Structures are given as C-alpha cells and as structure tokens.
Length: 93
Image: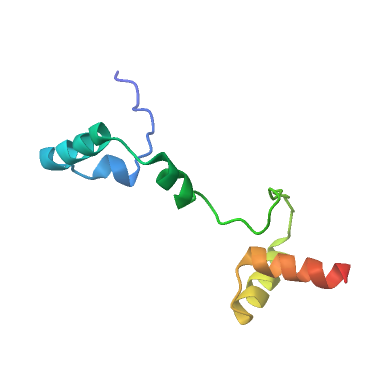
C-alpha cells in the first residue's frame, strides 16, 4: 500500500510561470549591482508608528467580545488594531 502524500502549502510564487526573458532580466539587474542606499530607503514591513519598536500583545477574547470589537471597528471605519488602541487610549486617559 502506498503511503499518503504529505500535505504541502503553495505560495503564489510556486504557481507563477517565469519566462527565460524575465530570469535573464533579473540576472542582468543583479550583475549590474544594486544601490544599497535605495534598498534601505524603501522600507520593508509595516510602517512604524513611532521611533521605538512596537510590542505585540496577545489578548484572549470571547466570540461575543470579538464580534463587538469588529462591529465597533467597522462602525468607525477602523481596523481591529486601531479600535483596540483607541479603546486603550480612552481607558488610560
């Protein structure tokens, strides 16, 4: 009997076809060299909210609390995170 196949996840990169011309273009670009200052200036990841690194805090919420949070966030055209930060600012004031 054949063993079952291992599950595998795929990214969009795995599903796209790259032409030989595109590969050559990337190789030419790499061989020409990159402007390190430009690469540093681009900024990767989420934009910062201040000068200091931010901390991630995990909070457990019931389904009802999460539904109320999502409703309040949608009503105020905010993300969950923005709604939580606004609630904390109000609480701490």
